[in-house]
Length: 166
Image 1 (cartoon, rainbow, N blue to C red):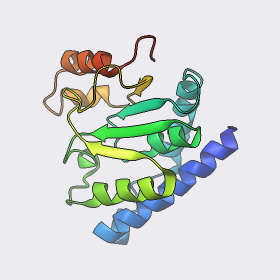
Image 2: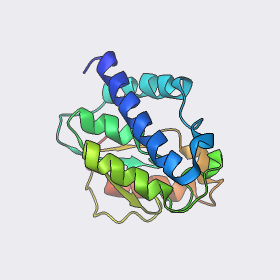
Image 3: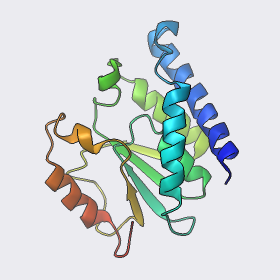
Image 4: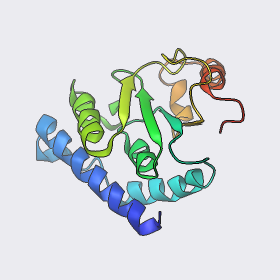
């Protein structure tokens, strides 16, 4: 997939995000997504995509946040499950109203075929060796802030990652 196609997908996810946030907050919070943010996501995503194996593999997007990275992975043909802590998605941006992230994830699931769960990355609800790859985009720096333990998280990632996984 070319860079232009990735950008088109990010524009669609941004539109869905704005729609859901507007339902919960009104127009005053439409600053959450920006072209600068998405340009960074796109650049980082291209580097991650180059490391992944064949399409149709199951990938875990750990600490998925709003879920944009998961949507991009799904567009490449991967089956993706995004996971983040309940109640913390958006907290660092001041988005604290209950339900908004569930509504956003539901909208992404309907439109883009992704799956999302609220779960603790230190105790993932998946069997051992379930995932061909685990992606954690811009989230390790938040583990300690959320009261977590990076070592426990990485041990759990190792548990759910298939041998020879990424």
